[in-house]
Image (tube, rainbow, N blue to C red):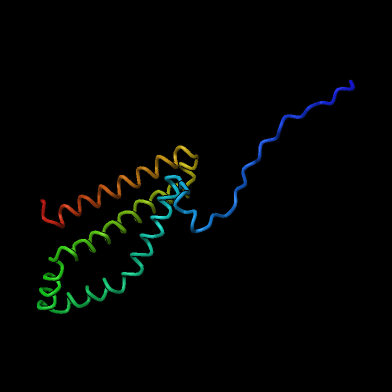
Length: 140
Protein backbone atom coordinates (compact mmCIF):
# COMPACT_ATOMS: atom_id res chain seq x y z
CA UNK A 1 0.00 0.00 0.00
CA UNK A 2 2.97 2.21 -0.05
CA UNK A 3 2.68 2.63 -3.78
CA UNK A 4 1.30 5.97 -4.77
CA UNK A 5 -1.78 5.82 -6.85
CA UNK A 6 -1.00 7.41 -10.17
CA UNK A 7 -3.65 9.65 -11.52
CA UNK A 8 -4.44 9.70 -15.20
CA UNK A 9 -3.52 12.98 -16.84
CA UNK A 10 -6.53 15.21 -17.06
CA UNK A 11 -7.62 16.53 -20.42
CA UNK A 12 -8.03 20.22 -20.73
CA UNK A 13 -11.72 20.99 -20.81
CA UNK A 14 -12.89 23.12 -23.70
CA UNK A 15 -13.79 26.64 -22.79
CA UNK A 16 -16.81 28.17 -24.44
CA UNK A 17 -16.77 31.92 -24.48
CA UNK A 18 -18.45 34.63 -26.46
CA UNK A 19 -16.98 34.75 -29.92
CA UNK A 20 -15.44 37.88 -31.33
CA UNK A 21 -16.26 39.35 -34.73
CA UNK A 22 -12.91 38.15 -36.08
CA UNK A 23 -13.87 34.55 -35.24
CA UNK A 24 -17.16 34.56 -37.14
CA UNK A 25 -15.60 33.05 -40.26
CA UNK A 26 -14.50 29.97 -38.28
CA UNK A 27 -17.80 29.50 -36.44
CA UNK A 28 -20.10 26.87 -37.93
CA UNK A 29 -23.70 27.81 -37.26
CA UNK A 30 -26.32 25.04 -37.31
CA UNK A 31 -28.93 25.15 -40.07
CA UNK A 32 -31.65 26.29 -37.67
CA UNK A 33 -29.42 29.19 -36.65
CA UNK A 34 -28.86 30.17 -40.27
CA UNK A 35 -32.63 30.20 -40.86
CA UNK A 36 -33.12 32.28 -37.72
CA UNK A 37 -30.57 34.88 -38.83
CA UNK A 38 -32.03 34.96 -42.35
CA UNK A 39 -35.47 35.48 -40.79
CA UNK A 40 -34.17 38.55 -38.99
CA UNK A 41 -32.32 39.88 -42.04
CA UNK A 42 -35.34 39.43 -44.31
CA UNK A 43 -37.62 41.11 -41.78
CA UNK A 44 -35.28 44.08 -41.49
CA UNK A 45 -34.95 44.38 -45.28
CA UNK A 46 -38.71 44.44 -45.74
CA UNK A 47 -39.14 46.94 -42.91
CA UNK A 48 -36.40 49.22 -44.21
CA UNK A 49 -37.74 49.25 -47.77
CA UNK A 50 -41.41 49.53 -46.81
CA UNK A 51 -41.54 53.36 -47.05
CA UNK A 52 -39.97 53.26 -50.52
CA UNK A 53 -42.36 50.57 -51.74
CA UNK A 54 -45.40 52.37 -50.32
CA UNK A 55 -44.32 55.69 -51.82
CA UNK A 56 -43.82 54.11 -55.25
CA UNK A 57 -47.17 52.36 -54.96
CA UNK A 58 -48.87 55.63 -54.02
CA UNK A 59 -47.35 57.41 -57.00
CA UNK A 60 -48.13 54.57 -59.41
CA UNK A 61 -51.85 54.52 -58.58
CA UNK A 62 -52.23 58.29 -58.71
CA UNK A 63 -52.32 58.52 -62.52
CA UNK A 64 -51.86 56.48 -65.68
CA UNK A 65 -48.78 58.43 -66.65
CA UNK A 66 -46.99 57.73 -63.35
CA UNK A 67 -47.95 54.04 -63.65
CA UNK A 68 -46.40 53.91 -67.11
CA UNK A 69 -43.30 55.64 -65.75
CA UNK A 70 -42.87 53.08 -62.96
CA UNK A 71 -43.62 50.21 -65.35
CA UNK A 72 -40.74 51.45 -67.49
CA UNK A 73 -38.46 51.57 -64.47
CA UNK A 74 -39.49 48.07 -63.39
CA UNK A 75 -38.54 46.69 -66.81
CA UNK A 76 -34.82 47.35 -66.18
CA UNK A 77 -32.76 44.25 -65.18
CA UNK A 78 -31.17 45.88 -62.12
CA UNK A 79 -34.57 46.90 -60.77
CA UNK A 80 -35.82 43.35 -61.40
CA UNK A 81 -32.96 42.05 -59.25
CA UNK A 82 -33.97 44.41 -56.44
CA UNK A 83 -37.57 43.22 -56.78
CA UNK A 84 -36.34 39.62 -56.71
CA UNK A 85 -34.42 40.42 -53.51
CA UNK A 86 -37.61 41.75 -51.94
CA UNK A 87 -39.48 38.65 -53.11
CA UNK A 88 -36.84 36.45 -51.48
CA UNK A 89 -37.09 38.46 -48.25
CA UNK A 90 -40.85 38.00 -48.21
CA UNK A 91 -40.73 34.28 -49.02
CA UNK A 92 -37.97 33.62 -46.47
CA UNK A 93 -39.72 35.62 -43.77
CA UNK A 94 -43.09 34.00 -44.47
CA UNK A 95 -41.78 30.41 -44.52
CA UNK A 96 -39.65 30.94 -41.40
CA UNK A 97 -42.62 32.60 -39.70
CA UNK A 98 -44.79 29.56 -40.38
CA UNK A 99 -42.00 27.39 -38.94
CA UNK A 100 -41.95 29.55 -35.80
CA UNK A 101 -45.73 29.27 -35.47
CA UNK A 102 -45.42 25.48 -35.45
CA UNK A 103 -42.67 25.76 -32.86
CA UNK A 104 -44.98 27.93 -30.74
CA UNK A 105 -47.38 25.00 -30.78
CA UNK A 106 -44.53 22.85 -29.39
CA UNK A 107 -44.20 20.91 -32.64
CA UNK A 108 -40.75 20.07 -33.97
CA UNK A 109 -38.72 21.32 -31.04
CA UNK A 110 -36.24 18.45 -30.89
CA UNK A 111 -32.90 18.82 -32.64
CA UNK A 112 -33.60 16.53 -35.60
CA UNK A 113 -37.02 18.03 -36.35
CA UNK A 114 -35.66 21.56 -36.07
CA UNK A 115 -32.91 20.75 -38.55
CA UNK A 116 -35.39 19.20 -40.99
CA UNK A 117 -37.84 22.09 -40.71
CA UNK A 118 -35.02 24.58 -41.25
CA UNK A 119 -34.02 22.71 -44.41
CA UNK A 120 -37.65 22.74 -45.58
CA UNK A 121 -37.82 26.52 -45.00
CA UNK A 122 -34.66 27.13 -47.02
CA UNK A 123 -35.71 24.88 -49.90
CA UNK A 124 -39.27 26.24 -49.98
CA UNK A 125 -38.26 29.90 -49.88
CA UNK A 126 -35.57 29.51 -52.53
CA UNK A 127 -37.88 27.44 -54.77
CA UNK A 128 -40.69 29.97 -54.53
CA UNK A 129 -38.26 32.80 -55.18
CA UNK A 130 -36.90 30.98 -58.23
CA UNK A 131 -40.42 30.53 -59.60
CA UNK A 132 -41.22 34.21 -59.15
CA UNK A 133 -37.82 35.10 -60.65
CA UNK A 134 -38.53 33.01 -63.73
CA UNK A 135 -41.87 34.77 -64.15
CA UNK A 136 -40.30 38.18 -63.47
CA UNK A 137 -37.60 37.73 -66.11
CA UNK A 138 -40.11 36.45 -68.67
CA UNK A 139 -39.20 32.77 -68.92
CA UNK A 140 -42.87 31.82 -68.74
